[in-house]
Amino acid sequence: MKTLILLLLCAGMLCPVHSQTLSGRVYEGATGTEPPTANPLNGVTVELWGSNNQGTLDQRVDVTTTNSEGWYGLEAEGSWEFYSIKEINPGGYSSNGATSVGGAVKTADLIEYMYPLSGKTLTGNKFWDAKDQPDNNPPVAEADGPYNGYTGVSMTLDGSGSWDPDVGDSITQYQWDLDGDGQYDDATGAKPQYTWNSLFSGTIYLRVYDSHNSSDADSASVNIREFQQDKAVIKGFKFNDLNQNGQRDLGEPGIPGWEIVLDEHPFSSPDQSTLTDSTGGYSFTVKPENDSTLCLLYEKSKNGWTVTSDSAYYVNVHAGQVVTGIDFGNYQRESSEFFDFGDVPTPYDPFAHYTVHQSFYLGSGIDSELAHQPDSDAQGDDKADSDDEDGIVLTSALLPGQHASLDATVYGTAEHEPRLEIWIDFDQNNVWDNYDKIVDDHVTTGTYTYPFLVPGTALTGKTYMRAIYSDWGPFPRMALRMEKLRTMPSKLEHPVPSQS
Image 1 (cartoon, rainbow, N blue to C red):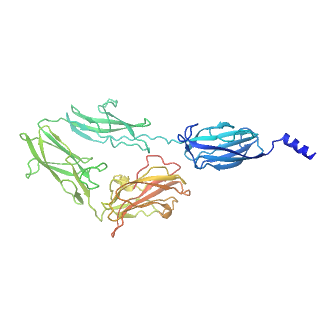
Image 2 (cartoon, helix red, strand yellow):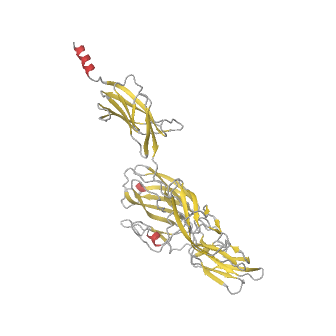
Image 3 (cartoon, rainbow, N blue to C red):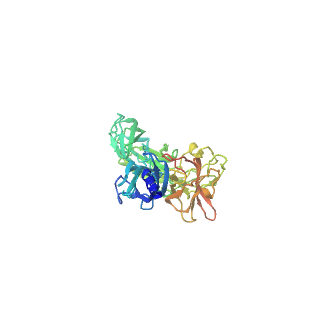
């Protein structure tokens, strides 16, 4: 009789499910694809839920994570009318889709089985995820200029300074409007050649596009004067030779307000002098005698600067000729009066500073100052002078518990084992300590990529980064870009302001 009662109870209700395994895999890729087209995802959380009502998740029965091959297995126990497999998307991923042999796909991240499980295929329950695509930021157009030229003489326009703030994206098109009609159909390319055959004084425009077809425009002024065929033009630049190699390289800025002298009759009194313009450029117009004239060009010296290129040139010019590339390079000599301050606000120490050394620096150059200029952005010297903070560039967002990376560009020789150190005040305690240190490396001239882990305990919100590149020889000399603003929200939008 007891046996009969037990059989009747089991017939009138759900019999307990003896442990059975529901299994499958999680991939990165398009739904239905398999390796090698799809990539297994390791460490993805997958849950099994039980419910007596279809479409609900009442009680979690089991939970696991995928292995290196993307495989998972869940133990189904208890007495439930429905068993649902739910994939939890890893950070930075979204569900693409799912497939199942014995179950029913309810959503891209949910597969449902009905009781009983016996007799059904419990394997092959697969999910596919895709990496989230970051929001696209438009490119930044840089038309350079101002441009000064002559009628009938070809001029090179330069839009190569344009850039895209998104990692992995780039400028795909350069379009120029050179006649002000609103149509960008007069020239293409980053550095097109163009000739004005008549006088022109006005504005030209450059529009650039990225791979997402987003665009940006910039303008530059142009002044075209009449070129007299009985005269000649000599042009060039005065530049800050940061690497002291005697030639103007990409990123080396022009020096405005420097006096350049031209003598059409060498060893006699100078005939002309001019100051370089805002770009460091200069030009002279001369009228050759007879067939040609020998001219002497030289720069006036300045205290604190050392010549790296020729300081004087002999140029033989002919009527109707335009001579370019007569450039003068200098670098600023080391002086105990030149410093670089951190400029962080209190309670940090805003007076922290080091002596600038011309042979050791981060980024494309050195921006020295005589006194600290603290502000809430730690960029007092950049706001008051030039912004040269391009030595350290974050290449990913800063997210607590996630991996991030940065690129560091340094200039230094191996004579005294130059050392690069970088901290981020993750716990925002106004001190850079060992907890905050992410880079400690001995490196010479070059660009280096450093991956690092943001601590899971890092506080979100505004914080500061400190970077020091130093000469650890017998007499330490520091060339640095110090404490610069960095924020740590859930996502850092690009462009990330470069710092060093």
